[in-house]
Image 1 (cartoon, rainbow, N blue to C red):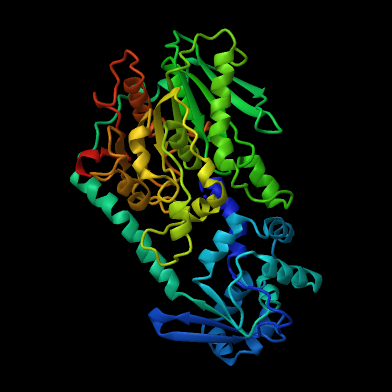
Image 2: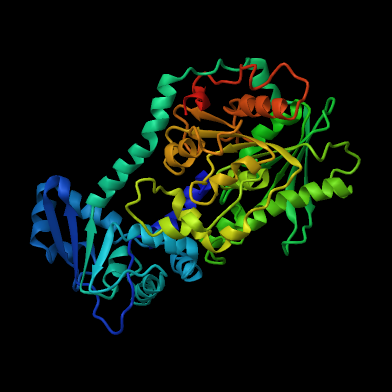
Length: 504
């Protein structure tokens, strides 16, 4: 679950399609013939007869209520149903599902969807096998659309309860309330000087290399940014999120390189943009839980290469004094490298509770990590500073291991992040008395989302978080500079940045 870059949101469209139904096969059962849609806010219950209806016209003819609505709306119902139920599904949809059957990420998506869609007469299925079988039958019978899929689901009747959508919408608002309140009480940091914010426009050299690592069968593709001026001898590694790529965060790297840092931006091949392309083409399954271990190992392997002199040859790097920056899943990896220990304990007890008040979209990804969670404690003592932006972390980490962190961590979260909402994933872990509240800081970006805080290579504006990241790393790695976190001047004019640590 960047779960989660903008590309991640593109990728979950296929999972969302699969999530329309959460059903299971139970012997020889007739197909669903009736679809019921409950609209509790309007006190309306719409029941549709699906039997024999292959087109929008046939569906409306089989349902007198729809006929009246369509006539009253001057054909609007026909157009809506055509777009939703009878529009052709992409040819690759079946391949995507077949590759994903039984995969933990799909299972979690289907479990979440079971709140909305229920099939009478069948227990819930989170493997996706029946969904795949039904879609295969729809393609075989030349009905490759949602209506054809619905008509081939085994069971007695299918219902969609929109009350669950209202519940989840309210829960999301609740999961952002504390962050908004903290921002309102706090004081936004003074914006960074324009000259500093835009300093990454030049002053660096860019290269792309491939570097083999022992734990993967394929080499890592790495973007390398080095300062054109005087180097400060410090190294920063930037880790991207799920289904993303280094280019999405190169703006951060350029600013750091222009200010003396050597920067490595690796692509994590098991969960990067190329892996998403393979997934959406039906050529690959979703990312394996083993990626939870491989991602931090990618970073440590780069540090090993620098230390051994096989990477950044000729560079004078202080390898025992490194910073790691990450976004979303990349931020989770940065927390692992900083020394926070992973555990399966909370994943086992909370992943099945669909009514958990802290549940959020990032739990789909976190819960898919269950089988690898107890092998994810991969601290690298060379990492002394970390900036983690929107990390999925509430279920994965053991907060009691906070005192063992060898790196000082700056956690950044957006108050409008619906993928990894601030309250459960950022505010709660750092509240007073929590072992994580031990010199680490939480900065909230007012109006920040999961997708507007990054720094794509083609972005014309200066990176929102660039000066903040630079200030934190300067201070934690004791780089001589007038620009430090405690010195201020790392804010942003249009997206206020507020250090709320003192209010927790």
